[in-house]
Image: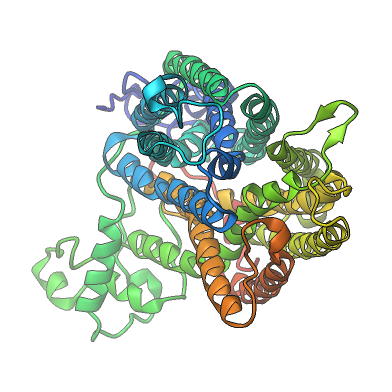
Length: 588
């Protein structure tokens, strides 16, 4: 998309800035966007609509996947949990690919539209596997094992959805955040609210997915649910397409990883040079269309990439990008490297979250779920998580943030890393409560000779779901903000892919822990994972996870205290750049 200037002479006064958006974005015709007719909430509506449809489809499938694998595919609990975790893991890892391609080559809008088509293909194939006789699990109402062709078709369908999610998740949210101008005070505040309301939309999709869609799957037909999801996704894709004139677009400028490698290569090449006496002597381009970053004193080895060598000064000619980097490029490399420890310390969150759609759902299936004559589908208990997250995000946005802003003077109320830390602490409490509830359920099941369902009400799961959901309201939204704001501006889709990879790697780590614990406990008298939940000791597994998460939180606090936030150089951008107070905090 070629950018055409609508700005005569390049002046950017206050009146001009109120009329036009000068943040490197363009409108659908490649021109500088008109502030009044593009972006902000009117554009975000279209994006949030398809996010609702995508989350409805995803959770409608994900929350009941383990039930499908055990009841239709006839897999045992251990195999079904591992397969569900593998699928969740792949789904959360794929955004790394989608985010990289969007930032480097395709742009976010094109990637979203392409992913919509893939999603529709996956949902259509899922629908076909339920209605076409030759693709059904078997030709009779009940069978001992599914046909091989059904297994292949079903897995192809859900992994097509995984592939589509790889384009959706990093691009939708970052595309939505791109609709707000960081350099405009009012829009910057609206962007902070955007992440909270984005998660409200996510929760609504989750809530309807695990209640209405799960009910249709369990008590009407899986095929009917697939038809509903396909239709909703098709309509929302059309809605997004018709929103094109209202969007602000970012033009892709090549691989965002190339400058990072250039910094590393230049720093290694100049490893024997001495650091300059003051950072002002390092190389920087004062006039730039991108935001410039302030110099920081951490990872000083990388600063050598920005040293101007004596022979360059004498020759009057600077080296190429693989030999000389700007201070901003060096600081962007530092940002990425500094995020790695925080990413690693957040993985236990992904492990804890994987239980909500696996063990917790199977737990609910063994408990008393009737309210009068109505029986709650097992997967619908996951709605407690959606309700808790919804209430948590709204309360945080409407009650906590205004109070904390007055107390701390921080636009966000508390720093991003503090928000994540509170969420991690609540996750520890939630898993500990889950261990105690599971121990009680097992004791009741033993007294009742493992009759299913037990007399224990499914609402005993409410505390663990609600505590974990409130924790997610802090940690998940915090991680989204962290990986969007703290990455280089050219890597924001990839940044949200880093956030999603926390959940994906956490799911793989959960499967890995199940395998290791199963092997160790089998050798020592009896596996903690039996053929079903009544012959397992998942309560002990929960206590193990609680201990690991507590240790992880201690490490996280130490890392957060040492973290230095992204610090934008005020007034350094040719078109003006406003300083974000959050980005100057040096402590979590």
